Length: 339
Image 1 (cartoon, rainbow, N blue to C red):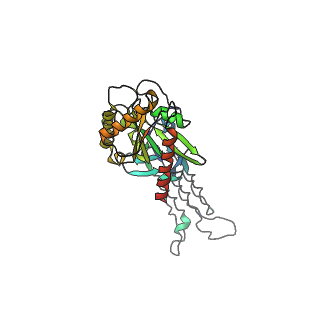
Image 2 (cartoon, rainbow, N blue to C red):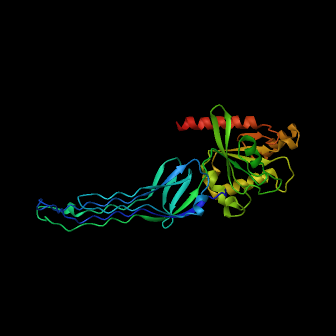
Image 3 (tube, rainbow, N blue to C red):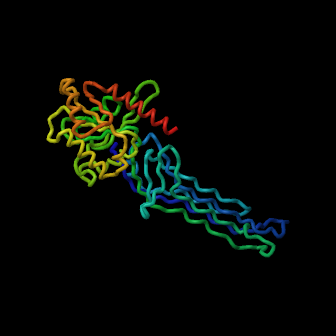
């Protein structure tokens, strides 16, 4: 299934049913009086968060949704049936904006329902207008119109840990090694064309969700490469793992690669730049253990890095256990602070 993280919808609530004008006419019952019933309310439209979805691709085929209208009232004070509400499943993490005003209508961060188009109110039958001075009312009201809106949906993946780095830094290899996610891996840039989510089991009931997004290149915040389209997926993560290739000879030095990515994060959004971020040196299997540790120390000294650092090889599974345990402990501390 193709990954789609933006969609446009046209939705409309159902119209309310009209009220009825009716008078009771039965044998041996004089002066029966008005008995026109009310109409039914129109159905409303709700968006419902679902953890079973991770893309908005379903809305490529269907973009228009309308709830049923309420039935009209009838004689003998019978009220029309209300139109059924409709529920549209969207991935958890979807932002819903009004296309006309840009207003944020809902931020769906859980499996909950968000009302996005209210159905019309029911019309009133003539029995409602009976009074001591109006014994035979012929007044009634029509049902109200349902709300109609054009919506812009934007998906921000809900993940605990986001993988960050230049193309070919080893992000896809890492998420394949620690989860069941299967992003494409090859020895050339931009093999990952859309985000992947993987659930990492640390042991027992402890687990966290990791997100792999396409590599970020210089100018991503202005739209270069694939970075701008997917940088927003990092805004919901609680921890960023900044991966840097220490093992292969590339045109960009490890220090310069870090500065490039940091610059794009800051230009994109300060909130993302200020998120907790750990440095992870990758491809340690391509060098001796002492050389890898020395390169990582030299890199941290060059860029003035004082935060947590790790040296791993996802292919050889070196250093993965220490990294995952540290991430798990960080998540536990975050939960304790939130509690």
